[in-house]
Length: 547
Image 1 (cartoon, rainbow, N blue to C red):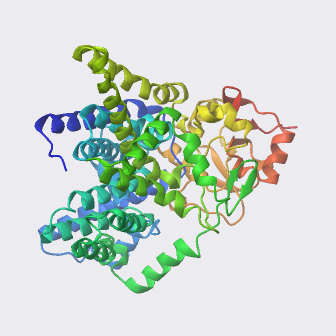
Image 2 (cartoon, rainbow, N blue to C red):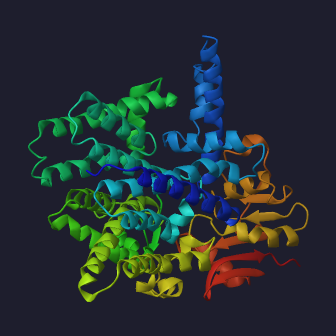
């Protein structure tokens, strides 16, 4: 494994800082994602509890922080997901709430984590014996994927979870050649942190085990197998330590937790190739990854993955990253699997494609090096390398500029972009990420106290906008009978009713949610405002006709 020099450290730091500035500068128009309101609220509660805990620790009295009611209020909301990503959002909010508006304050922490991931990818490619420019290409490839560029802004779980997956794999790989106790503990702690970010990271040891198995010089090392066996108990211990909700009734809550993610999870459907599925065809994850990654980057990643089958200093890392790029897509290939929200649950795959793309770019540069025989000067070769980097990143960057802030509608050149994907009957967009664009029109059109319908459970996004001052507070959300919101205790406005009874309806072109009553409503009404891209509708605002 190559050691980093001071230039590498400076480049990694510059990448992290530059990416954070870019994300911060482009965040203002990025819509609030469907899950963000509850995660943001949970993050605020967690950081408030942390303050109580630290103050109690200072005076040697933790009774207030350890009170079961306090823990329940702070960690019970959205307890199906562990706390780290939400705490990162909450800490960013606590540090910036006095001078940054919402949702920016809730996103500072996640944007910083995304920036750190970019730097870590650079470091990993360099340590894998990749060239400096190849490492830069791999790092930038992460945010050159338009959908990941969107996710890098928001206070969700998916990119933070994938970042911690990458960190845990990097830590295990980085410590693989060490045989001291810290190598054991460090690997276990890194996995524990990943598990305390999202439960899906439980699949990390599967990829690590496969990597050890195919590495001839490693599969005979009992200490590596021992470390792998230690990951689950250390991960469990870490998550219990960092998740106070599990401090009481630990076993029943763990059982409930496992049941939720295996047999009791609520049903979420997915529109794909013109049909709506609960259990998707086996090819769904492969098609989504192949059509939502810029084609040139995908080609570079395949070229980098080829290093896994060729002797050389990068082979071990290429094998490791290729395996982990395939773990999640393989998981959703199994019979009876339930994937939804397009790219969102496949985030680890995209993250591991980035360093593979870096290795692929490095392979291209090595091929250019062979052209010395054609009397290309060193200076011209350097310029050629930089031009090639720009060419490699250009398709993704151009798509981001054209689509921003609607990157979740991105499809690549292989299917003809957004329009081609629409003709293939792939889902256009999702996650309530178009609602923000509607707000100025809705604010201008609505009479005082007007009622607004959005897809069930999406009203939390509008409540968040009201609290952020982006949507008028007098507007009333229309909800079906029996549905609630975690915002109800704060006195939000709502009325029981249907889409037909609402003064306004916001309909995002997420075809998964085009239920019969929604389609009937759309057929019987004309939108008063619509946003489209290349002729493909993204969101429409409807207004009820009176009289």
